Length: 324
Ligand SMILES: Cc1cc2nc3c(=O)[nH]c(=O)nc-3n(C[C@H](O)[C@H](O)[C@H](O)COP(=O)(O)OP(=O)(O)OC[C@H]3O[C@@H](n4cnc5c(N)ncnc54)[C@H](O)[C@@H]3O)c2cc1C
Image 1 (cartoon, helix red, strand yellow):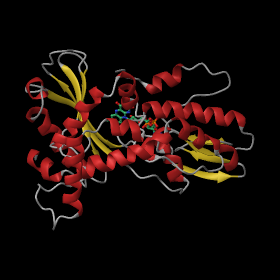
Image 2 (tube, helix red, strand yellow):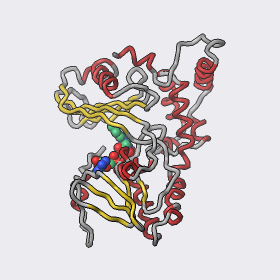
Image 3 (cartoon, rainbow, N blue to C red):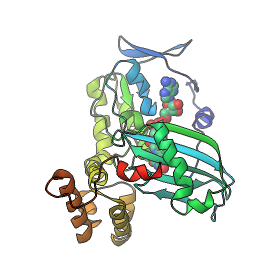
Image 4 (cartoon, rainbow, N blue to C red):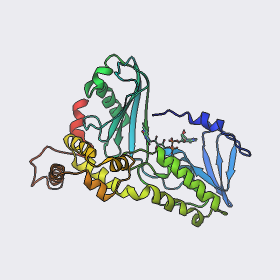
């Protein structure tokens, strides 16, 4: 794990002919002949090419009135002091439908400080930030091993937000590119996107240095490059996400993750890097899991015929309600 102060990093870059300005709040944008002008409260910035790296806000697209990609994750996190964490470099991901329909994380910052948070797949969770906040605070002391670690902890900081976007952009506009979450490059199944943000920046750069007029046709290879590197796995991500949300219960998730240990080292690393293919995904299944997923699917698709199992919804409301 590492924490990056991006503003400090940006200011430390040693460019020859570029002025780096951080902390700008973009407020309006308009197209000009062969370019785009962006404005904050006081200054205007003109570019023949603008790269929108504004994450889920997609601010340049929004200000130009272009179509915004849908938001696919909502998260709430707390920073804690006074924890009693047995290992001071603990970093865990947690999947538990009693808290959210997606997953959560614990990062120990020291033995007594930690960040703890959960994300919902959104809009499937159909819940708002205050609802997610209540679940995060309940989860601190009611589920998992952290129940013992966080008993005496107090919240020093809390933050809730949207992002990232798990739906890759299929469009390119003249004089405008979007990278990272603004381009919809977060992985649909896990909502992760650091690597994709950095890779998309590099691929955007490779495309930009080959372009002359920044027309739509000149910028189109960018998406093809991203697709070849990460995007070709996203269809499978979308299928996994659908099955996870609609047809899996806690016990199925536990069984599925245990199966990751059976796939071999190379395949395991491909799995955690998000390189989901049909054959790799099939390797993570076993007959019991296929049976459970099949019965859950039948139960949802034909409830009148097969109402022999408990109700299961994409929001997992039937289980998360217990934590409220
Ligand atoms: C709680 C949480 C945990 C995550 N954990 C992981 C993880 O473990 N691994 C992983 O790979 N990914 C993770 N992600 C996803 C990852 O954070 C994003 O995919 C990644 O940060 C996307 O980078 P980005 O540069 O595209 O956007 P961002 O990091 O969101 O940066 C966008 C920037 O644009 C700025 N901005 C927005 N609007 C404006 C405006 N109007 N004017 C000026 N500036 C503006 C913002 O202030 C921000 O600095 C997590 C996301 C969240 C929310």
